[in-house]
Amino acid sequence: MGHRISNKVSIGGDNSGDITQTGIDGGGGEAAVSALLDLVERLTAEVRGKELAKQEVLEDTLTDLTADLRAGDAEPAVVRSRWEKVKGLLGGLAQFSELVAKISDQVQKIFT
Image (cartoon, rainbow, N blue to C red):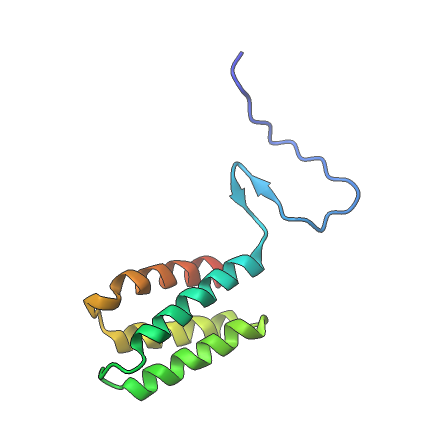
């Protein structure tokens, strides 16, 4: 007989740990936000000092986004809004496209 996946779940005792189902981690929100924060800080460092359109607005928005993520209780709508503003300001610049794609993916996963 082959391996069978059972949909039965039996939980008892302390249930405060992370939940994993078929290899997908359902917990660890802090780790995901920390990884996102690292990406945003990396983008901030790469953007700083460049002469991009609306440079000051871009840097201010990234600073606000970083502060939201560090606070630990960021409002999903605020994070999404600030990130959309950053994406719009970067306007498809190729030098940032890989990092923008990674951050967009993380924002979508964490703050939907």
